[in-house]
Image 1 (cartoon, rainbow, N blue to C red):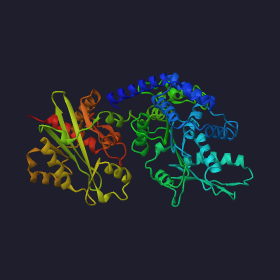
Image 2 (image 1 turned 135 degrees about the horizontal axis):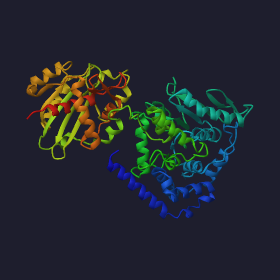
Image 3 (image 1 turned 180 degrees about the vertical axis):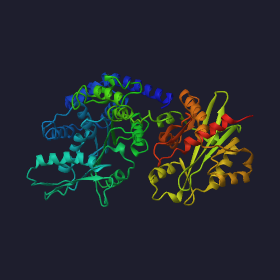
Amino acid sequence: MTEEEKDRLRLAKADVTAKLAAMDIGRYRLSDVDGRLDRYVRGVAGDPGGHNLYEQLAVARFLAMCDRYGINVTEVQQFYDFYESLYFPGKAGLQRYPLTPVQAFQFAGIFAFWQGGRRVVREVVLYVPRKFSKTTGTASLAIYDLLYGDANAECYTAANSADQAKKCFDVIRGCMRKLDPKEKRYLVNEQAIKSRRRDRSAFAQCLTANAKTKDGLNASTVIMDEFSQAQDSDLLTVLTTSMGVRDNPLTVIITTASDVFDGPFYDMLQGYKAVLLGEYDDDGLFAHLFEPDIDDPEDSEATWRKVHPHLGITVNPDFYEQEYKKAQRNGAEAMLAFRTKLLNIYAENEQRSWISASLARRISRPMPLDAIKGRPDAMVAIDLSESDDFSAVTMGLYDPALQNFNFHTAYFFPEGALPGHPNEKLYRAWASKGFLRLTPGDVIDYRVIVDYVLYLNTAVRILGIGYDPWKSQEVINMLAASGAGGVLKGVRQTYGTFTAPVESFEHGAKTGHIFINDNPINAYCFGNAVLDTDNLENCKPVKRRHTQKIDGVITMLMCLRLFIDYER
């Protein structure tokens, strides 16, 4: 995250804090709905240091929707009463639980607003740390629909893995067995709950991402658990697109953060935040997001209480302190788990990375090629795939006035190699957004890469074109035939060749003198790269796993090597 982005969030925090402080919350008469709802809203408004920016924005948005739609007190209180009549699993066995203030707010956010006889909120995201009781709480929404929704209601709990999907479904099964122990009205088994009533055909079912058949669905309630771990959104899309005939469909995404930056939820989370920040209008969404504010230290009890509103309720008060000490003691993997699962922030194991994906995103900038003026001097480097994976071309510019390097990398992939490729979905998503350029055929079309390099030479004056002497001969011959023979430079892929560029790039990235274009494949490549050292202490980035890609990292360093070796 750039300093400009951080300043924008600090300003948003100050603005919403002032806005809530100036509001006359009493005029909403929330205590007439429930004292806990009133207490929660006043607590957030009156204690900005104890609540994160997005929690504050959710409260401000809730009050704005109260002004627009009013509050359907009957619907809210009816659900509160229903929830508190259910028996949920606990340490002492099945028992009833009173709603906490934060839960009262969440359920009011779903059921309070109606227009034309239909519920306004259709999509819910609860982004909270582990042990918040989010799975238990949202199970009640499926039970409510199963019992009182459409006569043909279809409720689905879903997740990436069978075990995760079953957690929520098992809560639903336990509640239903308590309500109907002899199964006179509902048949309950391991995978489904079906109505036996003549007036209802409603059912609930547990689904996973690898479920064989999802055709013919007509979902009314969907609960997607731990969606941040998902690699694609196929199952969610199938379920939500089946809701078209429902008057009051409800999609609920409940999840904790993860280190899966390339999954669908990370991008969705940015969209939810944009709605809360007022960048988009969508009254059909209720988003409740818990994470530290931009300047909160991760080792502070105040931060822990901010991110986990049930600390001391569903989680022991000293739990966070114990886990933080354990994370410090047990190293990188333990700290990563603490940050993602308890602080609820997207993070990666930066101690094992060289330039982490997070740092790569921080040094990313828009760099449109058509904005380059004056045809400045530049270096270009090429890393070609063997045949059926992506290739990278980096152009490097040096700004002597600011002593900055700017690297623009483009990626290419043969379109015919997409079907069945292990990264097919990820590559198609990148291609659809213009981050990955598809070339015709089943193997990389070198003419496309040559044409791209020649195009770069119309925007800049290329002083050198670096290439791997071991696997680039065809492209080099084509470039030489196009008149580039005088600037072609073989860059050996040895540890000694990369040591100086590695050290220079790291220093420049961390001191604000190196920037890269804002293509997410760059961050993906850096996130896959770790430093390996030979017996002479020379170093070079290598892949964490052999299936991963670091092409963009290599071409940027090759460019920097060309700058280091250039003699005017």
